[in-house]
Length: 220
Image (cartoon, rainbow, N blue to C red; front, side, top):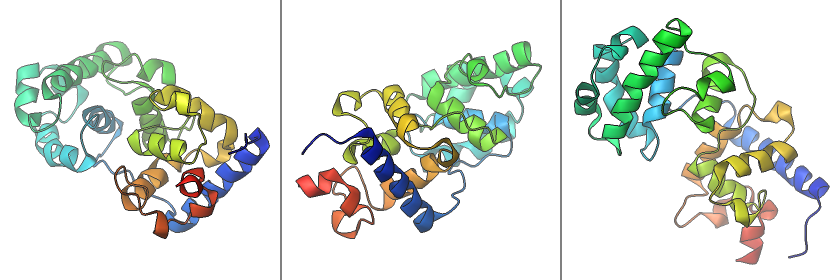
């Protein structure tokens, strides 16, 4: 396949966003949450675990520890008992307590809303921070690249293969070719597309609305 110019790649990326906007429209956050604190904890818990699994444990979690102040007083063992059905639950339990404690001690009990401050919180990386800023505060500074977004970006060849295992580099690749005004809905729309059509195993290329834009389909 001949090397694609950045201009052509940008046109293709914009068309991808247009078609997925047309197909899915606004997509609500997949994690149940009532406020930014519950959102940051839910996203933290979702690593290496499905959103549906997280949504099963958070009602009891937030019933017992509904605020940063309450969770800051919990022990990791207590949290772990509630979230034990999740992957890496012991580490996540420690992060929940430490995250809540930092929100209380460093931010007056309010979840911060800048990338620099959010990524100081234990267990919170750039992907989590992007989701919290976007969904919780309506601030869009990037694109949250989870497994679905990463997979789609590479199948569409919008990010080089060398970045396939580096989500932060994949995000930077997407930010360069997708206009800023289109960033906000990318994560949730692409997740919807990844779950419905562009699945990790056995993608439904014959039903794909992006088939004519996808080098992976043309090469298969």
